[in-house]
Picture 1 (cartoon, rainbow, N blue to C red):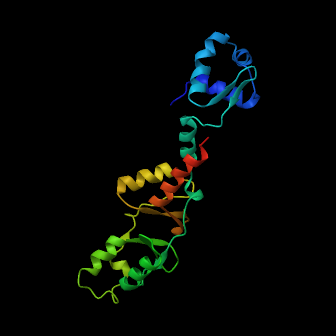
Picture 2: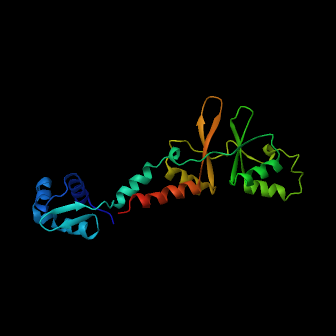
Picture 3: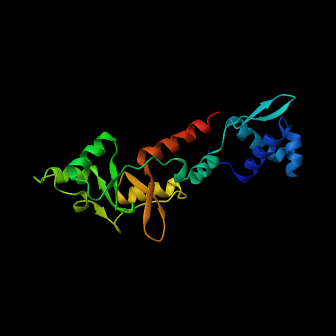
Length: 209
C-alpha cells in the first residue's frame, strides 16, 4: 500500500508525539479534524497506527512500502560482500577445478603476479574445458579465462540494486568487488546472487511489526 504525502506526515507526527489525539494532529497540520479523519481511518485499518479511545494514536512500528524501497536503494555492496577466491594465471585448469569445488563457489578470480585482476573463471568454463579431451594438468587457466575488458565488476560503494541489474543483464552469478589504482584493479571481495537475495530478505525481518 502506497501512502500519500499527508498520510506520511501524520505518521511522522504520531511517531514524534505518542500518544497524540486526532485533534492535536489536525492542529499540527493546520487542517480541520474532519479533513484528516479518512487518513487516520486508512492508517489505522492498514496497521500503521493503533487507536485507543480517550488516549489517542500510537505508532505501531509497521513501515510503509516507501520506507522499504528507500532501504533497498541504500543497501551497498560493502555491507554484504563476501571474501573472493583468487588464483594466479599460472595455476592449471585441474587445480582450478579442485579450488572451485573445495571452496564451494561458482567463480574464481584470476590475478597476475602483481595481484591485479586479469580474468574470471566460471564453473561453465572449467566444465567445458574438461570435456574437450585436454590435459588439464598442463593447461594454465589464462588460456580459457574471460579477460579484461570483458569482465563485469563492481565497487564497494555501488548499490545492490545496480549490481543485481548488472547480473541480470550479463546473465552471470557473481561479480568481483574491486578497488581501482593507477596500475590495475585489486580484488577486495565478491558479491553473488545469494548475497543479494539474503540482503533483500533481511528487509522483511527489519520491517515486521
